[in-house]
Structures are given as structure tokens and as C-alpha cells.
Image 1 (spheres, rainbow, N blue to C red):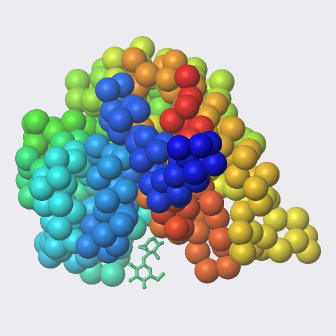
Image 2 (cartoon, rainbow, N blue to C red):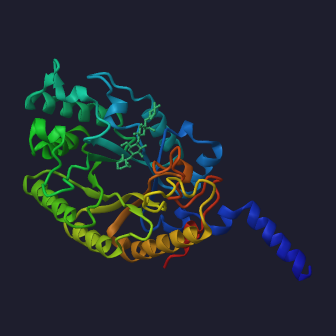
Image 3 (spheres, helix red, strand yellow):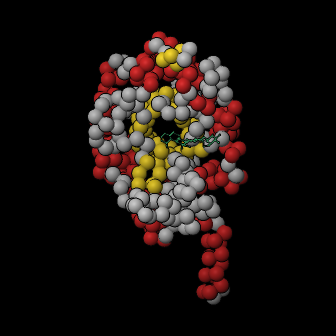
Length: 350
Ligand code: G3I
């Protein structure tokens, strides 16, 4: 064969099997840490998306269907059908499920906090919280290996804890109470605290304070999830590295739990709200690849301290950052399910 037909064969093969030609996340990283992705119930994914998921990931996180508003919309009325389909799919395919999430200020129905139209008292809200945790964890025992027991409880401002309804109704000990209830409901499951911006100050120190307080009170906490929702050109590499070390030094598993990269520039007056509606400029895709590559170089260096890295969505169109009038490109796969330059950079990172 002379050179040009061979080149043609390589090019055609490359177009037909680009994902295979580039390797998979699982092949590249699963020997170092778990690789996860947030998904809707799997029957909402296309067969091609399911294939992409199974080829690349070892772990899944339910993006919404295990949150309180999905699983207990009314007191004592448990709606586990969607989450059951997700857990059964995981079991059938050997994927590990991280339950997300039991106690959060968002996507939690108001009935938890009201009593005949008035604000409920501490005892009632505490009882409801414990019952919710016990019922959900018992239902998924053996199918969910770990839980984000409490999500986003730290204050973004000057305070220590977010003044959520949980905190207001129960008091600051609601976090310890939640972890205790979780440990009792499923002693085998790992119990995590999950939050955003805790790689940076001032929230990193608040997270460390929370970990120390829980441990001092004899409460079991097995790991901490750093969410990692970042913007292009703003990944806080140094702070992330420091945070991984600091949390690891507390004896906890450290996970990057909701990785994505918002590429839409901050909106200036008069600028389009949807600047990349038709396509993402190649220069932006290149910068995104470089930054994902740098992030995974850091992750490689810190891998002995990291137990899981999870992307918050399977492909760009599935991301919470994408919506009507908001065409975003935050993930390693595009809407056509083809790998983006970011995936290659992630796979090549040393
Ligand atoms: O299910 C309803 C549907 O019935 C309705 O027609 C539709 C109309 O808006 O809304 C649907 O619910 C949406 C739900 O996602 C499911 O798609 C909610 O409006 C929407 O608010 C919800 O957004 C989720 C968000 O959490 C809620 O705060 C995102 O999908 C989910 O990605 C996001 O995930 C969070 C993590 O749990 C915690 N960390 C931050 C992360 C990103 O915000």
C-alpha cells in the first residue's frame, strides 16, 4: 500500500471511531481513582449516551432523582421509582452509586419545615430529617455505596453555617445529627460532606472547622467532596492543591464531585446572552482543553490523595449550565457525543 491510501484508511477509521482512538477515561484513570458522572435516570439517556457512560465511567451520581423533593415530596410518601431505575442500572453494569443528597437547603419540600401552616419546631424538623435519612438509606442499602449526607451547609459570607431552614429550625447541630442518623441507617455506606468553593478561603477553613467539630463530637464522616464548578480562565489550581492536602491530612477521602467548566464569558452590558449559540469558537475549545489538561496534571500529581473525580453531566447538552438561550460547552464531550479537545487533554495529562 502506498502512503496516501494508508493515510485515507487512518483518517476514515479516526472519523468512525474517534472515542476509541483517543482511549477512555476509565482506561486512563480508574487504576488511580474512581471516575464518575452525574446522570438523570438512565432510561432518559439515549443508547449512544449509555454506551459512552459505560465505556468511560466507574461511578455515577444521580443529578436530581435522589434529592428530597424527588424522593419524599410529601411527608411519609416515598417516590423512589426513578432512583430505583438508576440504582438497578448501576448494579446491572457494575457501576458504584454515590447518593446525592440527603440534607440540603435547596430542592427540599417546605413540608419539612412547617407545622399546620406555621414554622415547625426543632423536635418535629429533627424527627422528619432523621426519618427521611433512615427511609432513603434503608431503601438503597447495598445499592448505594456512599452518600452526600449534607450538601452546601457552609455560609458564603462572613458566617460559619448557611442560615438555612435546617439550621434555623434545628440549630447548628443538625449536621452532626444528620451524620449520626446516616451512620445508624447504613453502617456500611460511606458518609460525605459536599460543598462548592471549599477549595478557597474563607470556605476552606469553615470546612476544616466542620470536620474537626464532627470528629471531636465522635461523629463518623468518611469523606469530603469539593464540587469544582469553575469558569474558563478561573480554575483555582493552587488553592485546589492546598485544599486536597488539608482535607487529606484530616484523614478523610477527598473527591472532586461536580467538575465542569463554564465557558460563557461574563455578560457585559449590551453583549449577547448566548454568544456561542451556533458553535463554540475553536479558540475557546482550545483554552478549555489546556485548562482541563492542567487540572488533570494536578489531579495526577495529587492522585494518591484523591478517591474519585466526577463530572457534573455526561455531555454539553446535558449540563445544568446549558439551557434555553444559554448554549454552554462545559464538559469533555460535545452534543454530538464526540470527544472534544478537552477529553484528549485530560487523557494526555501527565
Ligand atoms: O423536573 C422538573 C420538570 O418537571 C419541570 O418541567 C422543569 C421546569 O423547569 O423543571 C424540572 O426540574 C428541574 C430539575 O433540575 C430537573 O431537571 C429544576 O427546575 C431545576 O432547578 C433543577 O436544577 C438542578 C439544580 O441542581 C437544582 O438546584 C440541576 O439539574 C442540577 O444539576 C443541580 O445540581 C447541583 C447539585 O445538586 C449541588 N451542587 C450544585 C449543582 C449545580 O447547581
